[in-house]
Length: 249
Image 1 (cartoon, rainbow, N blue to C red):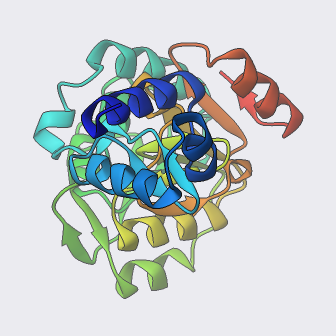
Image 2 (image 1 turned 180 degrees about the vertical axis):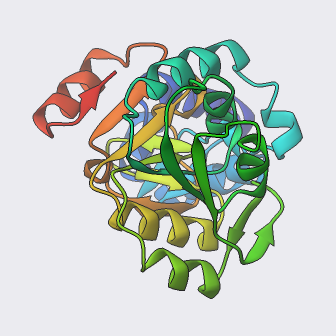
């Protein structure tokens, strides 16, 4: 089998099984693990998979630029947004992450609901200007343009003084072994810190993020109490989430 044919088959196996290991692929194809690792490196360089220790996971499509992501799975994000809004109650302190899915959520917030929003996303803060009953606390820092959010030490310091009821987290990957992931190291740190300051963390998961991974780990899936989805995950993932007491909405 040619290397190009083997790489295509690796991608097919990855799509079917949601993860691959170098040792298993070596046995399947009857080639050395060095050859498999070379295949995985080349596929990763084309952004076709995410390499992890011992193998690879499906790469998240949600790491594209913000303007591109605004047009990905738009209908799904709108469904997820409408579900997520139902979790907000009057008087709560709610942390809203940056991202295209949370941007859809802000559009469907009820205008008669009074609560407080904490956000490190300038675009989320501006979108809330027309909601007179919502108090907005905007956390500032260095702008990470890819996701249009503030990151850095100033953000982390400000977060430490907040106790929130719920945190709506945006991610680029959700995988049972890789956990919750995103494409930027600093952004992962901020998301982790925000989750630590909230009584409940809700992760909004459009289909391209499920069973995929990005380079930087926010935390284990158990960091989330609820996943808000449009499409039901596969049986294996659903059972895994149930065993970990993570709700699906």
